[in-house]
Image 1 (cartoon, rainbow, N blue to C red):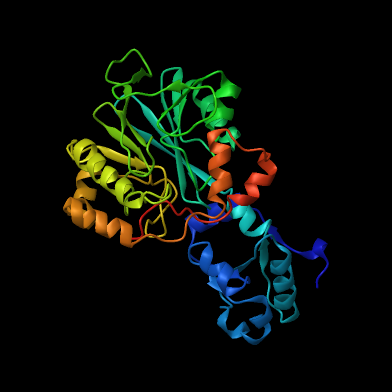
Image 2: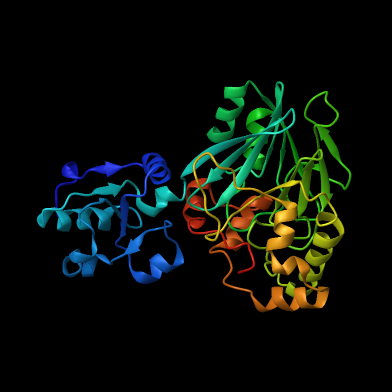
Amino acid sequence: MANSSTIDLINVDELVARLDAETELFLLDVREPDEFAAWKIPGAVNIPLGDLADRLDEIPDDRAVISICARGARAEQAAAVLADHGRSSRVLDGGMASWGRAYDVVEIPLRGALVTQIRRRGKGCLSYVIGDGDKAVVIDPSTDLDRYLAVAAEHGYAITHVFDTHLHADHLSGARELAAATGATLVLNPADPFNCEFTPIHDGLTVAISENFSLVVSAVTTPGHTEGSTVYQLGDQALFTGDTLFLESVGRPDLADHAESFARSLYRSLHDVVLPLNDELLIFPAHYGDAVDVHAGVPVTKRLGELRRELPALAFSEEDFVQWAVSRVTDRPPNYVEIVKFNAGRSALDLSELHQLELGPNRCAIAS
């Protein structure tokens, strides 16, 4: 294998920027097929390391090659194989583990407020900083606190409140840590089994971001994905739907082992709370899946009217919806039991151990 000092590395931030700016990259994933099938970078091509020497003709010679594996070792071996055949390449530093912590940011100006969508590209996780004047609130933060602190510093915000839309099962929540770091009020729904100090949410709760009374975050409980699932409405402009409603599907109801009853709750939440709202509301979910195209500078959002027309499940009768939701249950998020324990405030593991457990795609939507 080539000496590591001769390996040309590319870090994940540069990779995200290049993926958004050009289409001429060839992403060569040299992991085994089962690893690739479970989680991959969109557009990557899988040629296992052991097959690479015999399949070099499948790698175009007019595109820049980025070699990828789980953490980097196999990709470095792949780079050596390519170099032996006169082909240059770069290696994703840290592999898919670093892809799991890849972020970018999009700003969405609304009427008087600014929504900053922080996208965790490697997991399809979305979180939000909603600011006006010198104050902001944060919804569904990850444990990468610097992302939120940097947005606050850039805009001169003091973070006054931190919310989670529900007890997350597929990724670590940074809500407790961000509230502690900023002195913000932590607001959670007690219908989910949190074991920490927080301000309990209730239907009708409003938190003013500024003196402009149209800029308030209103909370409404929408059980179904979890008992404490909550949506937050920003005036008449936006709805932050957590895992209740996605751009490509709705939240899965089976993670608490009560799939049918939770599916009925989810149906009622959608039809009694979300769907009666104005078609012009922008929907900002907590996740996106492979079916959603993500581009630099373009927010992951659609108007409620668009989703009403595009998602067949929103037109189902209650019985058809329940049957559809229960019949399409897929594998649960990996290590979700330990992730839920941490997010609830009950885990004995530290963050370094837990970060390894959350690697992989999000699996909180019903497969469409």
